[in-house]
Image 1: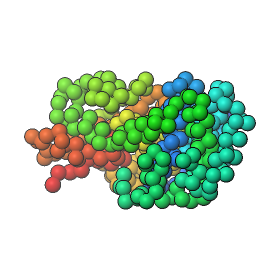
Image 2: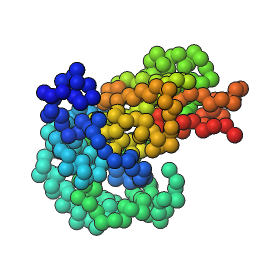
Image 3: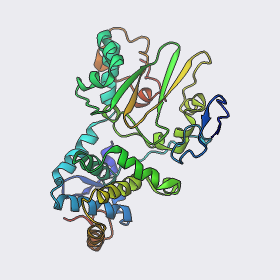
Image 4: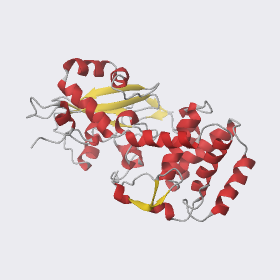
Length: 121
Length: 214
């Protein structure tokens, strides 16, 4: 434990996890904005429907996001991290296996080179 | 969302248009999304129609929901009191269900300005504002808003007078906040529909102010 520079009356753990960003120094807030792509909205829907089925909670979603670490936060997009977390939760809940996922991903890839072409039309 | 961003010549099997950027090379994570969705449908966990319905509900949730709540609070003192007392209940009764989470409405006054953030992730009052803007999820906004809110607000064009108290509310998975902005002067006698036109998304996050009449 160490003393907070701003509030020396409080102890705070030095081993703050990477996602606990409040108070860190950072640059100007970027104002880029993108419209959500269909695949991103579908990831969001998978999270909501998967939770509604009782396979995981928002805490399960967050645990996997936080366990991915800072590198994933810097290098992956928001919904890329979400789909990875949703997948991890489904596998942990025993909804499907890694083998089933791998086989299905191969099947999807074989359909085409774009998101549109890879749909099971 | 402007529809001219879509390529109308390519419709998905569900009848939804693909965006142009869906023609970029298929990514690993997109492949995973398709695979998970298909496995779940094959296993009977949910249907394709349920996925589509969820997306339609998501698209229907946008800041006009929050604007209706704010305009009503400006117009009806009893509703404003109910909103400040129990935000979840008051908004649920308007048809904007936040589910099991708690919603806390925080009121801007002559001497206090409120702003919301989620330092840990991206918690946001989706039932009233839809999906959070990209900047809300950035390291910069999450890190700095709790430390130097006035500087962050200045970047959004909101210059708080020195004498104004600035309160920052850090959201959690279970506790969401919405800012009730101060009603602009010169709107006496306006209808709730007219008032709602003045309420911007950012004014309900606290990084903006309502539009001024005129």
